[in-house]
Length: 337
Ligand SMILES: Nc1nc2c(ncn2[C@@H]2O[C@H](COP(=O)(O)OP(=O)(O)OP(=O)(O)O)[C@@H](O)[C@H]2O)c(=O)[nH]1
Ligand SMILES: [Mg+2]
Image (cartoon, rainbow, N blue to C red; front, side, top):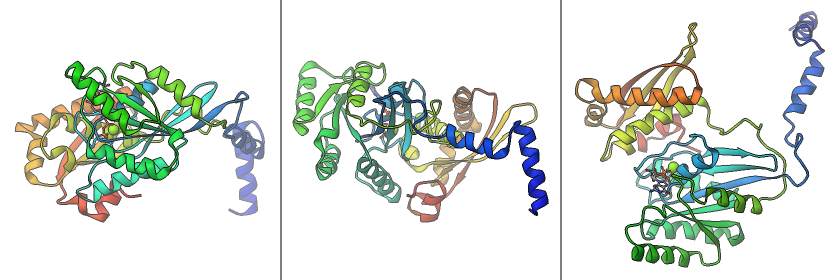
C-alpha cells in the first residue's frame, strides 16, 4: 500500500468503526487481556485427564461442561488427539485436557496417542487419574502409574474411581476398589459415575481447591479449542465407531474436505472416511449404501445440534492402505505433534 492508500484505508476503517483505528486496536487488545474483570483470588489452570482406554475420560469432561465437546464410544482408543474442555465460572477457569487412553502401542498412530497423554501430564496443574472400577487394574494402569511416579508430584493427583454404577457384584466391587486404592495410596480419591454426574460437582470442588491463583486464559464463552470443522469430523468418526466392530474403528480417519455456508443459510459439509482395506470400505458403506446412510444421518443430527444450524452433509468412503503407519498420512490427519 502507498501512504495515500494507507490513509484511505485508515479513514474507511475509522468510519466503519465510528472511531480511529488505533482506538479500535487498543480496545481489541484490552478485550483479549487475560485477566479482564476477574475477582481477587480467581483460580485457573490445566487439568490433565488420563487413564487407560474406555474408562470414561471424555464422558466425564462432557458431563462437567454439560456440552458434548469430545466424542465417546464403548470401543477403546476413541480419543486420538489432545482436546481442551474449558469450564469458566466467576471464581475460576478450569482447562481440562482430554487425552487418548494409555495402551501398548502397535503402530505409529498408537505411539502418537501415548505421547499426547504423556505431554499433557507434564504441563498439568492437577492430574485426574481415572480408573474403571467395574474392571480390575491392568498393565495399562501400571504404565500410567510409572509416568505419575516419574513426575514426582503426588500432591497434584486426584484418583477418580469411575463407573461405580457398573459393578458386577459387591465382592468384586470391594476387590477392584481396594486394588485401585492400593496403586495410589497417598492420593486423594473420589468415586464417580461420569454418565449420570454422580459426585461430579464434588470432584470439581476438589479440582478448584488445588488450582493456583491465575487469570482467565480463554474468553468466557469458549468451551473448547477444537475447531468446528474438526468437531464435525470427530462426530462422523464417532458414528462409525458405534456402528462397526472388529478392526474397523481403529482403521478409520475422517477428513472434512469442504465446509461452507450456502446462500440459503444451510451449511454444506463434504467429508471423507478413510479406511485401510476394501473389505472395511464395504462394511462402512453397507448393503445398497444403507450403513453409510445411517452413519451420515446420525452425524448430521449431532453436528446440527452443535452448530445450531441446518446442515447438508455428504460423506464418501475411500481406501488408504496402511495410513496408520505412514508419516505423511498421519500428519495430514493431525496425528503428529
Ligand atoms: N456405566 C457407566 N458407563 C460409563 C461411565 N463413564 C463412561 N461410561 C461409558 O464408557 C464408555 C467409554 O467412555 P469414553 O468417555 O469414550 O472413555 P474414554 O476414557 O474417553 O476412552 P478413550 O477415548 O478410548 O481413551 C462409553 O460407552 C461411556 O458411555 C460410568 O460412570 N458408568
Ligand atoms: Mg476419550
